Length: 320
Image 1 (cartoon, rainbow, N blue to C red):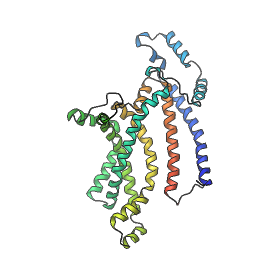
Image 2: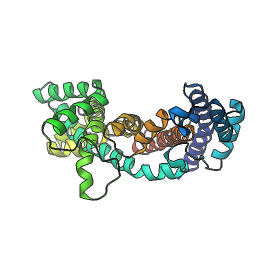
Image 3: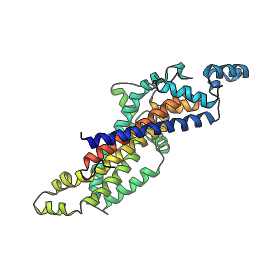
Image 4: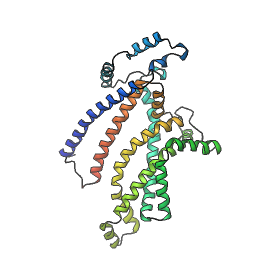
C-alpha cells in the first residue's frame, strides 16, 4: 500500500467521526421528540399511574434534560456500552443485536448474491440484443421492480404462493431455525428483497455494456479473430462491471432499509424486525444502537467501495 493510499484512507476515516457524531445528534433528538412514552412499556394499560410513570422515567434517566441525557448516552457508547433494552426482557442491547445479526446477514447476503447472479447475465444479453423482445421485457421488468413497493410484493406473495397455492409458509415461526428446515422460510423474503436489487443492477449492467461494446478496442479484438464470447466476457464485461462496484455498496444500504418491513412481514428474526418492534415500543436504547451501527456500517462500506473502485479502475487515483 502506497503512502498516497494510506493518506487517503486516513482522511476518510477522520471524516467518519463528525459524520457519526452528527448522526447521533439527529437520531437522539428525533426519537426523544417523537410522541409516546417508553415508561408505559413497563406497566399495563390498566395501571398507568402518573406517579409510577414518573418514577420509571426517573429510574431510566428520562426526567433529565435532553442535553444531559445525550452526554450520558454518548459517553457509554464511546465505551461500546449501548445500555439495556426497556423491553425484550431487559436484555443488554449488544446481546440482542448479536442474537439477531446472523439471520439478517444470511438474508441480505443471499439477496445480494442472487441479485448479481441474475442481473449480470441478463444485463449482458439485453445489451447485446438491444431493442429485442428480451431487452424490452427485461427493461420493463426492471422498472416494475423499482416501482412496486416491497411490502406490497411481500403481501401478494404471501397471498398467492403461501395461502392460495400452499407451496411455502406465510412467515417464519419467529425463531431462527437452522439446517434445511430454514430454507422454506427464507424463499419469500429473499425474493422480495432481491427483486428491486435485480432491477438496479440490471439497468447499470445493461447501460455499462452498451457503452463498452462500442469501444474501438473491442472492434480490434474481434478483428484479431477472438470469439464473441471471449470479447464479451473477458474484455467488455470486465470493464463494464467497474461501476457495479459502487452500485453494490449503495444497494447494501437499500437492502438494510428494506429489510425492516420485509423482516417484520415474514417474522424473520433479524435486525429489521428488531428495529420495527423497538420503534413500536419506544425502546430508545435499541433504536439508537441500531441506527448508529447501521449508519456506521454504511459509512464504512462507502469508504471500502471508494477504495475498491480506485483499485478496479487504474485511471483513477487517490490524489485529492
